[in-house]
Length: 297
Image 1 (cartoon, rainbow, N blue to C red):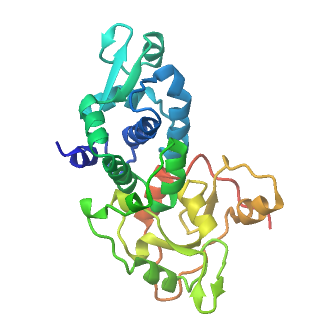
Image 2: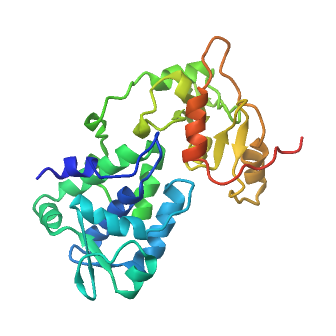
């Protein structure tokens, strides 16, 4: 059985690029727990809080319950659920899963394959990360899921879908004249830019193209906050800051809150600005909550 192929084909609700990473997040969490205890079962009532935290932080803006993937992942052949009554899930109701003592575990055939071939776990985890999340979130997502990947397992598996255009970074940084489009940071060591990255507006994992119209030159901090949904870009290319963001320090006020309502810096004349449809996707699928009002000048 090709477990990588099965992982790549997890059945998810999709419509016009809508993010639905519920099953991938549960599977990443289950792989992390498998590393700790290969025979342990995950009682829903005990892991519900962990799973809800993953969905809240790395899932789509609309709130959802971990009961949904806990039940539905069974249909993909990688997960099994048992209750006090025996095999089988009682459904997607949170109360049903709690009151029946529902527990979940990787499917027996998958557990056996992971024991035979330990490196398979890392390849499955990396595939899930590549297919559903931007690279800027991979490290912290592994930590949040309790996953420890070997250095050799950190290689991209982008070939499963399509090849990235390695010119993307240079094209985007050039278009924005090597300055963060949010704060203007333009640090270098000698002639080499440091701390500047090409951010995909519509994530590559969701068919975002590798071109200037889908890119922003951002410093490392603002790239991470952009991919986490703290920052966004509105019509008119003005910066959005989520009301959910909390920060009381002078640094948080200056480097995040004060960005609300500011216009983007760049791109230079002649370079194509970010396309409206990519901005719309980011606002609906990544940006969290309502935007703050424009900062007082």
